[in-house]
Length: 343
Image 1 (cartoon, rainbow, N blue to C red):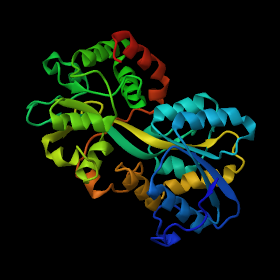
Image 2 (cartoon, rainbow, N blue to C red; image 1 turned 90 degrees about the horizontal axis):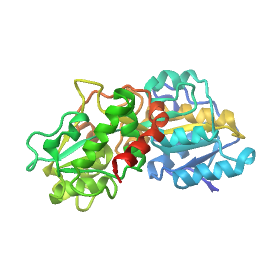
Image 3 (cartoon, helix red, strand yellow; image 1 turned 30 degrees about the vertical axis):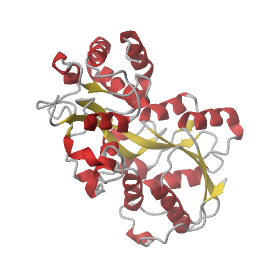
Image 4 (cartoon, one colour; image 1 turned 120 degrees about the horizontal axis):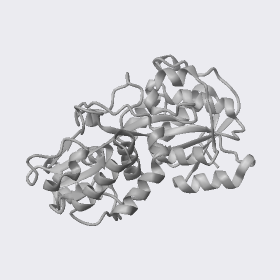
């Protein structure tokens, strides 16, 4: 295991400067993280946690499903203390496999909004993103203002999106099912398919690049992919970023669909107390800034500001649907995409 106990960077602030969260007293021991996140800012957060608490962090990184399968195979002998991944749908998969355990923490319940954590404390959001509508300003003068409008026939041949098997698309449809019911969701998915400019393909960045190239008029993507382009980090996107407009949908209704990167304590955690301390540390102002800025996301703690690039995307009303519903509707969402032929 990679041992991150050594300081990677100097502390930015003393323990007393971590607002609103009391950092755990100096302790002994370690905590083992299984994570699918791969950002330098996360490593800095881990090293700061070790500096503040004396708890050594051991990190195992991998793809989400691989880590879930590894934990299942390890069973009661798994060294995993904390599981970290992106999307509530993947957290649901881990929980359904019996890999996560409930945590009762006043810090976590007070710092993290109810909609962004499991109702019984099996997992907690640690950074937030919105899945919204982007459009080519030259080609689309009246972009859709709601998710429902994406299926309007007037946008036929304009829409670009990821595969229906992608977790982000499954979670979006899962939320649509929760708000509108099964039949309406199927009609909507059919409308999305009918409006496609091309077969679903690629990642979110590819959808945004399609807006720049003119292959797409409208795209569905997570906000942080666009923010990367604004920040000047993405070839094929940054140079055409001014061509793209953004719509936070359903501002007169449920609000824009949001999701999280999240973490939970493993069911067989050998260092459970330290694992809970780590999750609580994740909600500190400093840790929230690391998480959010590392991937151009929004903090889950409302009092912590996002980066200037992310704030520049504009303010919006977020959907307050509890994200556990996304996982609960995941199987049906996949069935619906399959039934309408959304590849």
